[in-house]
Image (cartoon, rainbow, N blue to C red; front, side, top):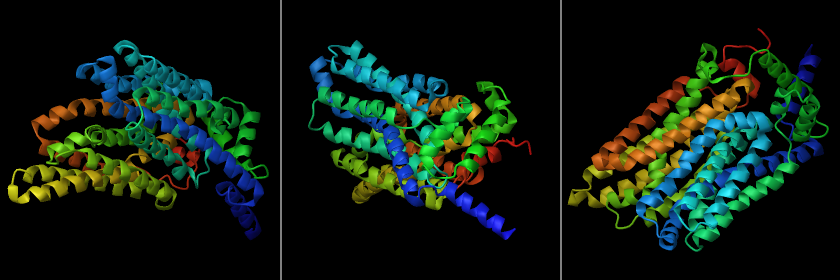
Length: 474
């Protein structure tokens, strides 16, 4: 009996740590790293697209003779395209596969960047921006899902969070390059991550779980074997995925109304709730209007504060990647949300005291510390972890529909906050940041009460426990 238990633990070890044993394990690590690197090229493209409009504004308005209103349309239409892409993202990824969806997205992004490059007037410029937005709307869903579906459970959190790290890198580098390059050169650079991904997709395996869902069983085992190592024993993991997928196939393919069944309520509440709290905590308002926030709080210029924000994002996101599979999702989320709450509170306090001459220097310090604390804390967890959890909690038969809904809500929240922020600041700068602080505070309670810990569990284990449904009929 002891011998059997020992053998069982060895088998589990081979599955949970296939990358840490033998030369074939090392080889599988390279397959996993390559697959992740190709996937997050799409995340880098996401960051480039979001970061483009700020450094390109002066050049585009000058050369094409656009008004502020016309350029505002150009900047905001990216979000409209992303919402359309989000609506279709799950279905495209289910129909074409995860690799096919990424390639499909790349075509729209490349076409969009070329349209921007060749623009002579506003309509082609806007059409290009809309096309890029559609592409990144698809990528924002399919990249974390693909990484979650190919990665072993002991590495899944860290690998999936690289998605957010590359978004930060793309946005920051585009902002910096925009200070020395023309808007046309910057547009051409935007095509590079798409081209890298398009070529790279031919060298990486498809998601084993998608292949199992489509009943491509030989391809499923081949893909899983390549990801786990040539000589790794994949029998237990493959059986678990097959059993779970077969049980789900007894049910009809998930529709939108299926999400509102009681058994999926927990997953939907967690997935939607995290995206709502992520956006309505004010992240896009603070990122898009950081410079004007610093000026409003008393700084003579917002450039130094904006550079400090860019500098803190990447190291804090990297720290989140390193801690993800050590501390777990829940502790990082709660620390991150608490930090954003405190950051907004300090910023609100700076607005309260800025009119008092005696406290003016303190107001400036509070504003700078508050915004940097918010940015660093958000990058640590709230930026990436909601996407990690979204990719983990929905069963494969509902992942497309649920993913589309969750991604759409995220982009819709981004649009609402970006649109409303200037009006809120005109109403009350102090009140605006107190509202954001309140939302961030509620986020801590939401995570503590409803969000499960998914560290160290297979996707099938997570989904079985969250949805009142057992794949083995138990």
